[in-house]
Length: 114
Image (cartoon, rainbow, N blue to C red):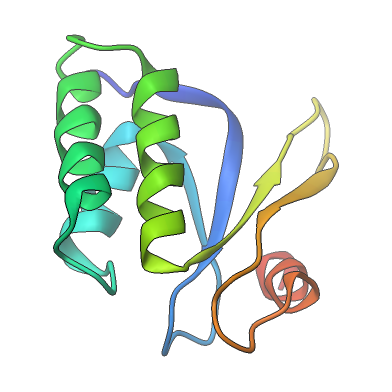
């Protein structure tokens, strides 16, 4: 299996979890979708699982798998922050979605940094 590494890390906070999860590649995304995702039905979830599996096999681009995961996050109302890592340290973060109930993007950023 290929790592299918992404250009930037996605940081998510799933309902019921006290710490954010960093997702850096399609393999990690596939695990999170299969084992921890709050909504395991719906078209975006199914596509994300399929594209992440295909990306780990080298059958689709890592970018396509990443976009599918973002669509699944929208569908499940999971908050997402994008982190660009810079050589030698943590880079900047950008909120992509904040629709996880009462969870704010600030909570995600502070949990991810912990």
